[in-house]
Image (cartoon, rainbow, N blue to C red; front, side, top):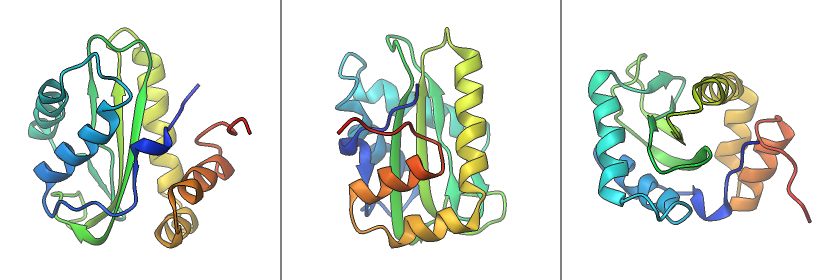
Length: 154
């Protein structure tokens, strides 16, 4: 079951370039998986970006990496109101970043998560709602409404 922790949601990414975004979002997600060295997370994400940009178009990037020492998938979400050059497929700035960190021994879950994130963020209405969200809770509710995340326990 996918889970996005409130602490792993950044409403306004401070970084203005791809490397900065990877570092900033990795640091946010790292709070939820301290057993993995932060430099290792960044290095793995950077290695994946060197293969090809994870900027999938429509203002969306989905940086992802397989990380040893994880027992489940960890997600992070970042939003940049100004947009970030991410070498995206459509050459447009990225406004929404969903980071996926997965254990190497869960390839099916990893691919399903990547596909689900991509499908949900292709929808213009969800991108519009995410751009207008006022706080972290709003982001989580929107992703739940579009069935990317399960409903949170109250």
